[in-house]
Image (cartoon, rainbow, N blue to C red; front, side):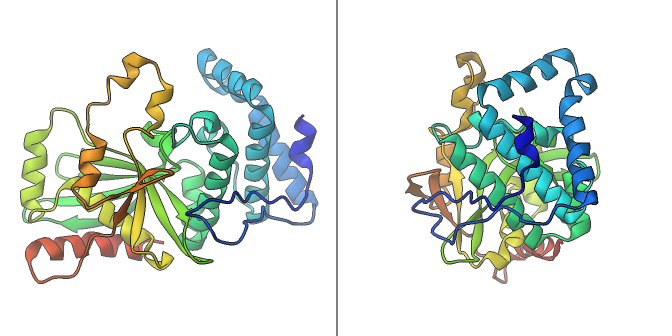
Length: 321
């Protein structure tokens, strides 16, 4: 089984869908050299010794997931190896090795399609972000996207692997908004970049948006300080900025019925108290077959204070590389 990790071939991962009609995406193809072989063996060593670096329960789950879906897991590991070796990246963070492909992003979606979407995400991400940013994200670091000043407070937006924010099932990357005065986390969104429309175009899909519990008063204070812009809306504007060159005017969002929490036990499902569908309905979302909703981009042009606040968040996303 592990011998497949070292096979170098032209392997298409395209899946035909109604919302991803772009040309098939190819896995990286390159000639085997001493450095690439060394990179692959180094990553294989990290896989085989994973259980030695974590608690026994986590290590056991890692290999149980592999046993449940060995072929798909090996395909994912092969992509990680090829992606890192071709670009001379360091070994990825351990979280990437244990991506839960059987219960990822959308309830009821086929695992092969999940793998295709995940690979697409990283291929798009490297078009948007600089090599330095990609390497730091690959290693599991949190990167500052930018800072926006409110009336009396400053707010910073950060990006990392979704796994680093406790949401490995809900996306590939995560962005979070912090109030710098007290370092309070105001909102976290997990998302993935997604091929959409004509060839070369892309947008993003939001897997979840989570604010702090019992923080209604804090949210009100922040909204006032940002001239009427709520924290969740601010993060969506940042994502619009990140995907600005994708050429789309809408994004996708996972609905309540499609959320991967439905793979969990009933007790865990009851912990999700937010009404996702109502949140997206407020933003003029339209039903969409695969993920749940298609949401139009929010306008950022205007002379009023709220529009200017939106433009500031849009700019930090667009300028981040």
